[in-house]
Length: 445
Ligand code: LLP
Image 1 (tube, rainbow, N blue to C red):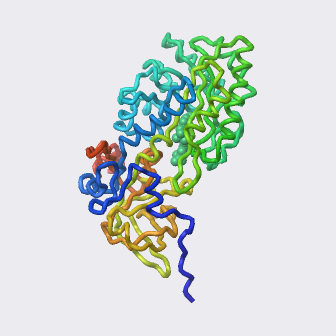
Image 2: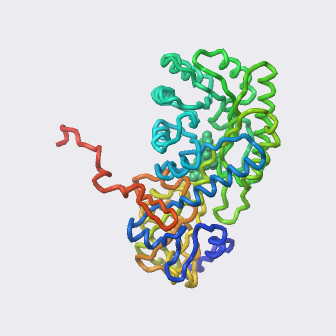
Image 3: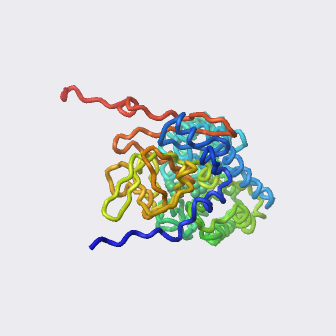
């Protein structure tokens, strides 16, 4: 007996519901799905697929929405964009021109931020394992702040700074042991996570930092996790713990100039209720508004996620028994989030005809030789002919940034649109570039 036909995942929002919440994307009767004023079909013609497509206006709008929320709450806060979310140079340049600083975690990200025109003084160096070479590079470039995550790292920073004869501005990242109720792989502020120093150890270490050569102890930092959509309670608990720590340090006459409140603000990928920047600003203000410290936030996803789509073409549709598979030219090597975090991304047909056609359940997959190369199961999509285009929504953060060349697949192109302008801002990797750097030792020739 045949297996029963798969049912649509009935909670999924419709295409129209997805677009209604994303003003940067509109469906036009003639041009089809359009990002800002650029039809995605035009992007496919000019840049090919798969391609990442970013909306400059959305980056600007979201950056200013976040700044505005902090300003409305009268918080003296700086916004450092978490480069890891989207390290594309044109994206960074777009944000730099609006005044954004950068939160970086490697020499490579620092080089990108500087190349984008972000002043070194406007860069915070985060991360649990910065190498001596990276610290040397960062301090020789005058990086504005290093967030240290252990006593061992404080010693490394001191050694490098004294050798270079500079003073490193160092904040201490503390682990407040709160549960932000997000995916386990992106939870960072629980005691079992590798990040930060236990908050109970912080006062003694901070006092030692103040007395350490080459180091100016400037404050404290935390970052409790990413894609936080469960309300403000974990944030509030973390910020109250930070405020308490600041009071304790000052009571010991230790200077605290800066409090870095981290990133993590979630976005609605499907229909999750996601907190607003105003809610985040409120949580910061309630705990730290009277601290007198300069405040910092380091959002990545909230700014860049909704600003990007991944544009892909259908290679073919195949049917096996009762299942329909839509096989795309994008794969898990491009967008790994569904395979890695069971993430849900909206998938919308680009042509007006496909958009309007009746949907039925299908599995949307890539060509990579792993069952995990599945973007969606039982997703409602119309019949899609080879060459039909689809757009993955909210792919502007942790999309291209996490892609690989698995299965010897070249990295996809990246495109920036601004109004009706379009520019390829990262060329598709060539087959030659994919092989570059490899060699066969002479004993094998
Ligand atoms: N600051 C620090 C120290 C971080 O580790 C992160 C992200 C951020 C800021 C920015 O967090 P956001 O505002 O973007 O949530 N690849 C995962 C997300 C990993 C986040 C890692 N750290 C994903 O695709 O969901």
